[in-house]
Length: 355
Image 1: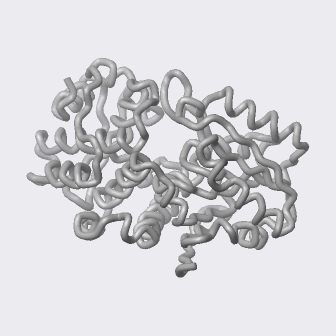
Image 2: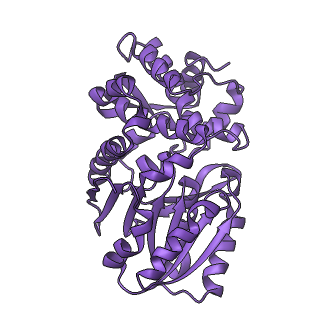
C-alpha cells in the first residue's frame, strides 16, 4: 500500500478524509474507529456493485459490523424520488435505526442519494462516503451536500448531512471508463481556475493519471478551506460552483444523458468566454481554460438552444428568484460573483457562444 494521507474537514462535527491506494480492503477497520459498533447498509449502483461491493462488505464484517447492501440502477436519471423511496424502504425493512449507518460506495449519484436517505431516515442516521470515481473523490464526497433531482432541475431537493468519514481508495480509478476520468478531470481543472494558478499549470505539465493521490489531496484540501469558511453554501463556498450553473442547465437540457463533468467543462468554457468578452477577465484566460479542457478530452461548446438553457438556469437552485449567481473568472486562480437577472443571463449565454 502506498502512503496514506488524511485531511480533516472542519465542520461540526469534524471528520477525516483518508486518501490512498488499497483502502477498500481496510475500510472496515478504519470505519470502526469512527463509528464504533453499529449496523451498516452499503448502497451501490449496478456498475460499482460487481466490482467492489463484496470487498467492502467483507472488510466491514471482518471489523465486526453487521452488514446489508442495496443495489440500484446506475445513472443520473435514477437520482430521483423512486430510487430514494426504494432505499428508505430497504432501510426500514432491514430494521436499521438512527444509531446505524449508510455507506455510499460509488460516485456522486450514489453519494447524493445515500446521503439524502441517511439524512432523512428516522430524522437522520450515520453516513460514510467511500468514493470510487475521480469526480466524487475530489469534490462531491466532501462537504455534506446531498440531494435528488426533480423535473424542474438538478439537486432541487436535498439537505446538508456531513459524513462521519470519507475513505478514498485511488486504486478504484483504474476501473473507470474514460468518460468518468474525464468528468473528474473537469472538476480538478475547476479547482485550479478558482483558487490556484500553480496547480492549474501543473495539470498541463504532468497528467492527472500519473499522480492521482497528490491531485485528490490538493483538491480536497482546497474544498476543506471553502467548507470551513462557509459550510452551508451562502458565501465563499459558492466559488465551487464555477461552471455549474450553465453546466446544470446543459445536463437538464440533455435529459441527464450528459456526464456531469462534461457539462461543467462546457459551463466553464462558456462563462469564461463571456467574462472575457465583457472585459471582466484578463485577455487570454478563456483560451487557457479551453486549452486545458481539451487536453483532457472535454467538450467546450454547448449546442442546446439558448432559450432552453435560460429556462433551465432560472429554475436552478442558485437563483434567488430574481437573479442567478454566476461564478466568473478574473484570471486563472481568481474568480468573482456576478448576479444576473433574466435579461442579463441571456446576454451572458450569447457572449458565451450559446445560440
